[in-house]
Length: 448
Ligand code: ASP
Ligand code: MG
Image (cartoon, protein in one colour):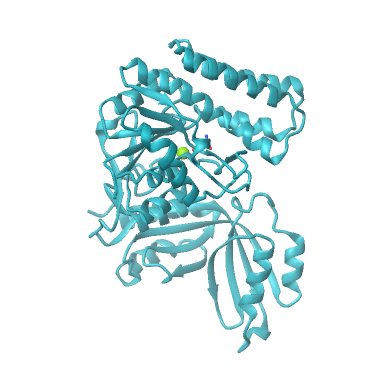
C-alpha cells in the first residue's frame, strides 16, 4: 500500500548557498506531504572531494581543498546558528574530513568515505534552515538504511535490505518530523560508507521513496523539467509536461542530463510518480513522469551522448556459423565492457561502447582487442556521438522523409531501431553532433 508521502530531493545548485537553501525550505514548508528530504552536496563540494581522492596533491594542496569546502559551507553557516544537536555533529564531521584529508593515500573504501562528506555536511545546514522556517526537522544518517554492496565508487543498492531498514528506522519518525537525509551515499553489509556514482542523489531519493512506499518523488533542480532537447543547444527547446517511465528512462540513458539514469528503475518498479522542477521557480511547473501517461505518440525529444566508440568485428567465418556473437560478448564481458548498440550483418557486427562509462580504461583494453583479433578483423573508431530520438511508438515511416533529409548532410555511421518502440538511435561524427541535434529538433520537434 502506498502512503501519501513524498520524498523531495534537492540537487547541488539548490543547496549551493543560503538563499538557495532558503527557497528549497519554503517548498518543504508549503507541502506537508514531503516527509523525507534528500540533499546533494553544495555545488562544487563533491568536485573538491573527488580531487582529494585523486592523491596527486601534496599536503598543502589537500589543506587548500579542505579550506575551499569549508569556505562554501561557512558562507551558509554565516547566516545560521546551528542548534546544539546539529552543531556538535557538524564539528565532528568536519574533523573527520580533515583527518582523512591528511592521509597521503586512500583505499577504495576511504575514497567513498571522502566523497560522502559533501552530503553529510549540507544536510546539517539544510536541517537548520528548515527549522528556522518553523518546520520540525531532524537530520538522519542515510547510511543506516540505504544498504548497498561494496562496489566502492558505484555501489549497487540492496533493495530488500534497504526496505527493511527504512521500515524499521525511518518510517516511524515520519509522523513526527521531516527527515533531512543525504543523497548519493549508503553503506555496505559491514556498515562501511559507499557511494552510488556521480549524480546518484536522484537515485537515492527514488530508492528511499520505494523503501517507504511513498507516492511520489520530487526532484528539484535548476531547470523547469525535462526538455525536448538541451535548451543550451536549441533556443526553442520546450519543457515536456508528461513522460512515461519508459520514455524518461530512455532519455536519461541516452544523454539528457537532468536525471540520473537509474532513478526511473525504482519509480517504475514500484509505480512512484516522479516530478522534476526548478527550486528557483517552483510555480513554473515541470515534468511529471508516470506510468504510461502518454497517449501522445511519436518523437518527444532528441538527446546526444558524446565519446562513443564504434567497434566493428568482421569475420567471413561468421557466415552461417553459430556462436560468433556469444564469443564476442563473452570476451567483452570478461573485460567488464558495457555495450550499448548492436547491429549485425551476415559477416560482421558493429557495437558501440560508451567511453565515459568505460572510463576506468580510457582506451579500449589492448588485450581485449587482441583476444577479439584472434578470430575476427577488428576496427575501432573514436570521436563519435550517439544521437537518440526518444518517444513512444516511434515509427520510422512517419518521420523518415524529414529525418533522411536532415541526415543527408551528415555522415551516419550506424542506425539502430526496432529493439525498443521508444528510441531510434544513430552514430554521427562528434564534430557534427550539435548541428545534427539542432537540425532534427528544428525539423521534427518544432513543428506545431
Ligand atoms: N554530490 C554528488 C555529485 O556531485 C551526488 C549528486 O549530487 O547527485 O555527484
Ligand atoms: Mg544531479
